[in-house]
Image (cartoon, rainbow, N blue to C red; front, side, top):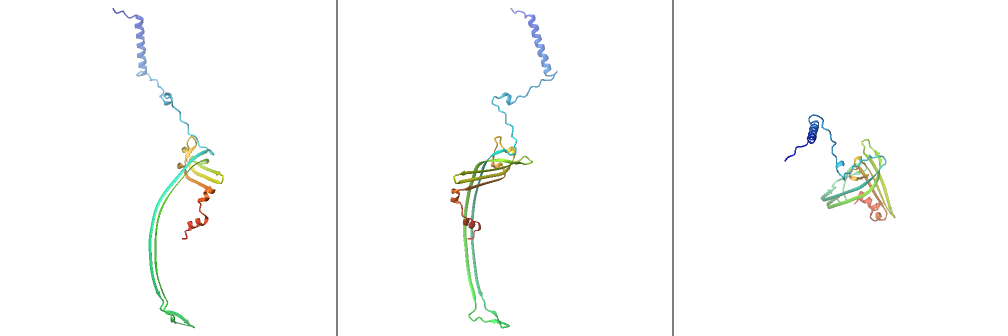
Length: 222
């Protein structure tokens, strides 16, 4: 046998349904829908880390430059030249002054003759292959900032080990945005790059050319 629902329960249920209907009307057709804040990765991820703000390059800041310069060249050449010449000259008549008179000079010792032959042949073949690589790191200082924001770098370094000395120098211009947050940069993004490396000591003396060989290699007299 079904028991009738109490009047208090009926009234409570009716009030709840009326309130739900009013909220639905206010949220859709009869009122503005409340705006909800957009979801972001920072609100939902436990491993999210905010990115660092880009640093602004300042005058006299130090920048670590990794220099990596390499070149490779291959050249082949061949020359084959041949030259021949032949000459036969004969002086049959000549002139001579006889006092104030001009006359024929008789060839008492025979007619002068010149005869020669030249045969010149040159063959040469050359094969040249070169490969070099330079890699080191150097700390540079921002010595100037252009009106467009580019930074002018300049750095010098000297390493001395007993009698061995290595001198490094670097100059160039780079965009400020290319400088990483840890103040490092690669040499391949530097414009007007100029790198100078000098060595001095026993190792350098063992393979360097003397002044006579340098002169001969430059002017090649033979």
